[in-house]
Amino acid sequence: MTAPRLTRGIVMPARNHRIALMGFALEANRFSPPTTRLDFESQVLMLGDEILEDQKRVAPRNFGELSGFIRRMDELMAKRGESWTPVPIAMAAAPPGGPAEKEFFEWLLQEMRQRLAAAQPLDGVYLPEHGAGLAAHDDDADAAVFRVARAAVGKDKPVIATLDLHANVSQAMVDQTDVLISYLTNPHVDNVERGAEAADAMVAMLDGMKPRAYHIKLPIAPAQVTLLTAQGPYADMINLGQARKTDDILNVSVVAGFALADAPQCGISVVVTAKRDKNAAEKLAREIAAKGWAEHGRFIKKLTSLDEAVAMALACGRDKAKPPLIFADVADNPGGGARGNTTWILAAFHKAGVTGCVMGMMIDPPLADEAHRLGKGATFTARFNRDETQEFSKPWSAPARVLEIGDGEVVGRLGIYKGTSVDLGRAALLELDGIRVVVASLRHQAADPAFFERFGIDLKSVRSVVVKSRGHFRAGFDWLFPHERTIEVDVPGLTTPNLATLPFTRIPRPVFPIDPDMTWSVPGA
Image 1 (cartoon, rainbow, N blue to C red):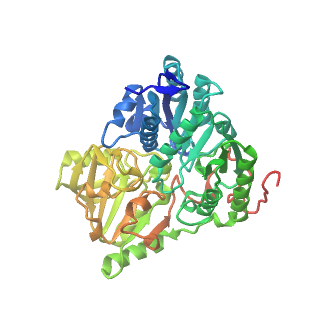
Image 2: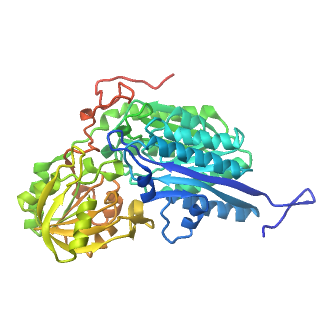
Image 3: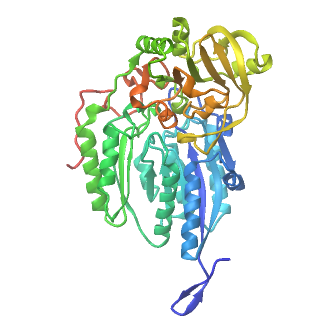
C-alpha cells in the first residue's frame, strides 16, 4: 500500500495516476498488398488485460518501448511514494505491408474510443506507435489514433508517443500530442530506453510541465540504406541534435521517414520539444534542418550489382582464407513491406554454384508446409512462390533436401528482436546443393542469428550469409560481419532503394533524391 504524503501538516492520500496504454504500429508500404486483420493477429492484436498479461512473459510479443515505459513508471512512482495504474486499451502491430484495410482500422479506432470512455477517469495516455501508418482510406493513420487519445483526455492532460525512426511525421501528429519521442538508433536497439524517456516526460507533465514543440519538414525522402546511425548524414543530424540539448530542451527527434509510404507527410522531420521556451525549440530545429539540407547530397548510396555479389560469394566458398561475407537483399525486406520471397539472389547463387552459403528467411508458407508433410531427410523439387502473384516474386524451382523442420516462436538473441518472442509459423531448413535456405511462413526480416541457429546452423562455420533485411540485421550479425564485410545487393523488389523507379503519386514534390536538382532553404531563415 502506498504511504500517504504530508503536506503543510495535513496527511494527504498518495496520488494514483491512471495512464492509458494504446498503440498502432504499421510501417506501410504503398506498393505492397493490403495489411489485413490476420496480419495484425499474426504479430500483435491485444485488447485490455491481454496487454498486461503479455508483459508478464519473459519475452513479450509487444512493443519493447512499452516494457521500458512501464518499468520506469514503476521506478518513478516508488521513489515519489505515489502510485500509478496502467490502463490497457488496445495494441495493434503488424509486419510492414500495404495500407491497413479500412474495416479493420475503423474497428480498431472504435475499440479504442469505447475502452477509453469506459476507463475514465484518466490522467494521461502513452502511445508506443510506429508512425508510418496508412489505412486504405486515411493517409495519416497515426494522427487518427492520436486524435482518439486526445479526445479522451482533453487538451490539458499529457498525450505522449514514441516513434520509430522511419515514421512519417505530420503536423497533425505533432499538434495532437504533447511530446513525440523517436528512437535514436538504426538498427533500432534503444526502444526500451525511449519508453523510459516517455515515462520521464509523463511524470514531468503530471507535475505541471507544459512542453512546447517545433516541427520542420525537410524535402528529403531518402532510401532506407542511407539511414544508419553509426555513420553517415543521418547520424550527423541526430548527433548534432543530441549535442545541442540544453536543460530547457526536453527532446530532440530527427525522424527520417519512410518514402515507400508515398504519403503527403513523407520526408525527414525535425521535432524539438522544449520544457518551456518554444523559441529555443525553434532555433535548434532550424539549425539541425539547415545542416541536413546542406549535406543532402550524401543521402545517396551505390549498391553492389548481382554479378559482383555472385563473384564475391563464389570466391568465399572456394577460398577458406578469405573472410566470410554477409549479403543483404535490401529490396526484398519484410521489415519494409516486401514479401520476403524474391529469388534473384538465390537463383543466381545456385546457378553459379556458390557453396558454403546460408540464406534466410524465404517467406513461403506452401513450401514450408510441404517440407513438414515430407519430413526430415526427404528429397523433392522445391517450388518457390507457387501461389505468389506479386510481380517481383517469380516462381523458381530446384532439387532440395529437408534438413530440419520446426514451428512456433523463437526468442530473439541480438539486435531489434533481442528478448522478444517472434513467431515464424511453420518453418524448415532446406539444402539446395551448396546453399541452405531457411523457409518460414510468417513474415519477419532475418535480423537475428536465432532464426538460423534454431536449425542448428553454426554461423561461424559458413562462408556467406544472405539475409532478407535492409539494415536491422547489422545489429544482429555485426559480431561476425563488420561493416566492411557487409554487401548490399542491387536487385528488384518492393523495398528497392532506387526510388526513382517507383510510381509515386502522393509524396510531396519536388523531393530529394527523386528530384535531384531541386533547391530548398529552411523556412524563415
